[in-house]
Amino acid sequence: MAGAVYIGIVGLGCVGLSVVKILNKHQDLLARRCGHSLVIKKGVVKDLSKAREVNFPLSNSLEDILEDPDIQIVLELTGAVELAYQIAKESLKRNKGFITANKAMLAKYPHLLHANIGFEASVGGGIPIIRALKEGLVANEITAIQGIFNGTSNFILSQMSLGKNFQEALKKAQSLGYAEANAHLDVSGQDSAHKLLILAFLAFNSLIDLNTIHVEGIEQIKPSDLHYAKQLGYRIKLVAYAHKYKEGITLGVEPMLLPKRSLLAQIEGVMNGVSLVGDCVGETFYCGPGAGGMASASAVISDLVEMSKNLKQKRKPLKLPITPYPICSHPKRSRYIRLEFIKNAPNLVDALEAKLVIQEQNTHIYTTPPIDDQSLEQCLKPLKTSKDIRQIQVLCLHELY
Image (tube, rainbow, N blue to C red):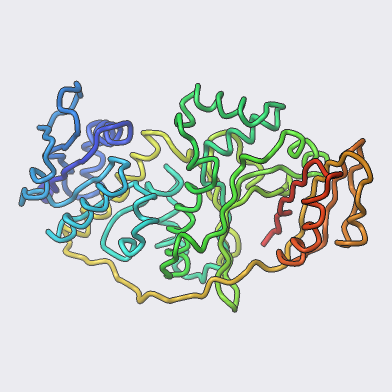
């Protein structure tokens, strides 16, 4: 056994304590797989008065970890964006390895993705999707990413499909611990956008501005939409996607109608699912728990094992040059349109070449052939100001790649 790799851990919340638990439980197993032992030497927490069952000293000063020459790897598990960024900068400045689960920080400071850091736990919880892109699919040019990256939103939509409205489903998610008291990042699609940016960097080796990602959440989805989608053979999911074309990359997060037969449509509750399309292998699919202490800790430790091996063997990961890709507009896409009216239902069949697929009193459901966003908006603009129209809901009909 070739000695030990010493670790400093910042943050001992749910994920941090789960990392400690796994390292203690599988100490011998991990040592055999690494060729050396993994030892947490120090921990840093905000509140020292809180009781924690750990077998290493605690401090409330980051310098105790950063200035310790024995500590080779820093685990950042605080969840705070600016603090995490400062820890990353200071760790890298001191030539220490840095591992984080903080997708919001990486999305705000994406240049760190090109540094020698570990971030497997930032996307998909326990799903090894980062390593799949970095290693498993290295022979492929990635042409598409499609996924359900947010378990909170997926749980809410699953509950709404059973008849609950959005607020009822959100309250249940909060009562079960699946949603924070302020669930805006989850239900607005922003959390999924953070994760999409990270995967898009790995897939296309291109730094992407978060503001260029089209983002819509699930707040405006009604139980009736899930009901009508089911009648048409679809399920509604919050889908994050990135597609590579000759003209550039299209990225977005939005609720979509997925065919029931698609693998993503089968993802229920708080689970996550990711589809990656490579030019050689075709479509590969990954699913598993997208959150939770032990699932995320499993991903953190996979980074820890890999980084510790590199340190012992003095290997440096290869950095590929960044390839800038233009962000392009969406191609033509089919749509689902729910039109609720008071009287005098408009005729979308002629205006959009749409098909009237469900007709109920004061509600019409249409599907359209592929149409670009601008043309769709021009056709629907007069309806949005009409006194006869109560509500218009427009969702994308998912296309299989």
